[in-house]
Amino acid sequence: MKNRIFRTLLFYGIGFGIAGIAYAIIGNAYIHAPGVHHLILFLTLVIGIIRTLVSVGIFF
Image 1 (cartoon, rainbow, N blue to C red):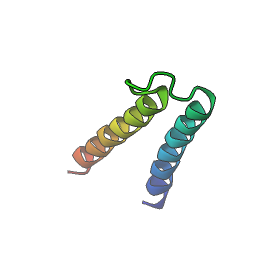
Image 2 (spheres, rainbow, N blue to C red; image 1 turned 135 degrees about the vertical axis):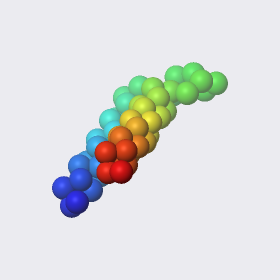
Image 3 (tube, rainbow, N blue to C red; image 1 turned 45 degrees about the vertical axis):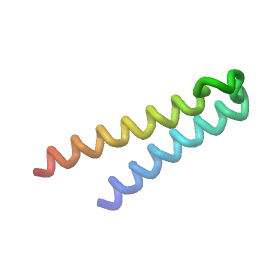
């Protein structure tokens, strides 16, 4: 269980880290649309939710 928690925290840490680097390098060029960093954060959260649902499905 500790291994899974570590892998999950690592996954989210990498996703948020990449989003932070993307924001630092690219910024938000067009204020009326989401930036690249928003899309990276969204994909990180969606993939995390999908992985959680798959894990719950395997558990039950």
